[in-house]
Length: 340
Image 1 (cartoon, helix red, strand yellow):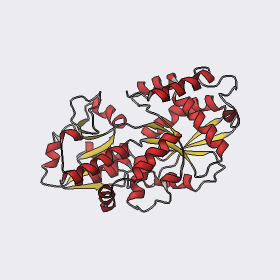
Image 2 (cartoon, one colour):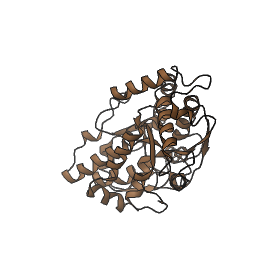
Image 3 (cartoon, rainbow, N blue to C red):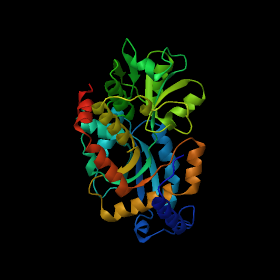
Image 4 (cartoon, one colour):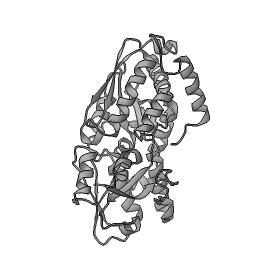
């Protein structure tokens, strides 16, 4: 598991000390800002159905966030439009509301860059609370697939059929951009209600490949249902040391710029955000509370048991990586816009 930078760990340590190591106890809060939300109710919105990776992270985080804030955290599932519906609804929520969304930041930014239907937000304007995780994406096929290596996909004589929940999803942008970078025929099948349904299409032989973050793939890989072919990152994943990365498949200069932009986009990961222009006191309190929760060693251990990575960035750092992703090279933005 990747560890947070030393400065972040130090900050988390101070917050943990303030929260007595396991979050606030007996109603005591870590700071004056946190105390301002004591007794309040906070909506933690998941833009997908229950049972998926985002839902798992939200339900892991909620009790620790409650402890750190002394507030009630209600997890709400609001699926639709590949995650764009809940994201758009958060964007137009009142600034003084306590609505937060665990956003598929990769999908949201790519949908904005492509000017996809259903994008009613500007990702740069959200009130960013933190990044929760940022696992590299893994391209996987069914264990009995005719494609045994990523090179087999590159050499495919027929379109490779990828699956994705919709244009607002992480899996969609990866499935659209990667074939263009490596110039092999492909199509993306959408309309699935969730990633599990999309995976079922691959396992049934109705589609060929699925791209998701590592922590959403590993259980099916360990069970022998999926075969990983590629890590979309610069370094091998410690749990998949024999699976090649995109660095093992060099490409042209223009294509490499797009590939680098894709990797940087993926690094925005799963992030927590509130509506634009959130009340400054609420924003400060939520950022402090989320930092406290994500720095809790018990939460990290619980997440690791479920093979879920915690790789946090502060709210300010998250806003910076989002702005950098929105400022992607023209070549990459063109590839994203070319997606149907």
